[in-house]
Length: 77
Image 1 (cartoon, rainbow, N blue to C red):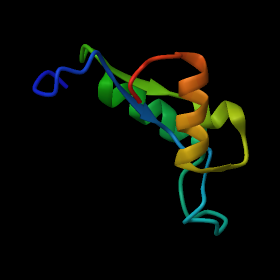
Image 2 (cartoon, rainbow, N blue to C red):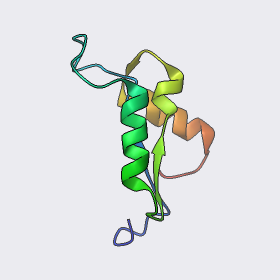
Image 3 (tube, helix red, strand yellow):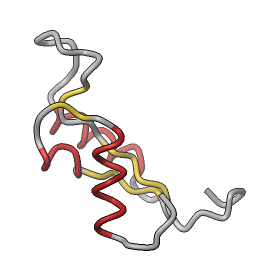
Image 4 (cartoon, rainbow, N blue to C red):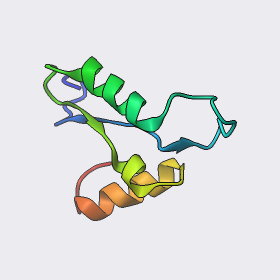
């Protein structure tokens, strides 16, 4: 983050990873979010995001980028 001059980095936890559609292939989204938050705790500028979990359904990067651009117009995503 600092070497690239980034204000922050979002770690976006997928709701339904589209490449892993099989039941039980990955831990539940809320568990993965909690683990990500725990891993980032105390590290300035690194934030776990539940954006894709709140949106629901399969997670595609382009949808997340469009959501972020709408939320923070003018921000570099």
